Length: 102
Image 1: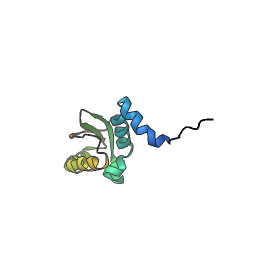
Image 2: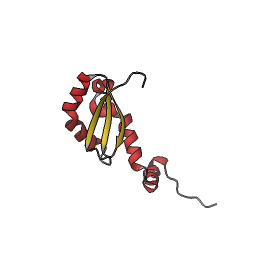
Image 3: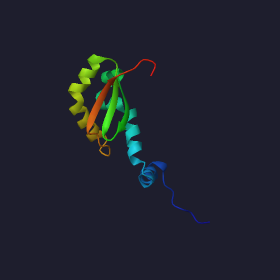
Image 4: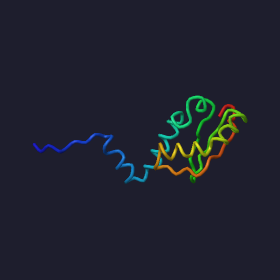
């Protein structure tokens, strides 16, 4: 019986995603789920990244106070994303106030 070398899913998944053209979406999902690691727990509790489109990260914030806070920190946030997720290109941030029942 021929034994084939086995590989762990974690070892082959990145290559499969790259072949399928989904590597960027995978990294984007990791960013959205790891938001607290990028901005810290307090800001993550007041803001939610919604989507990344054409290099713009769309973020909803709890109110205008947090919108202003993230506006002042946007350069720092973008630099942190570049460091933590180098395969994702974020050129800018667009902020909006969270809608109720959204």
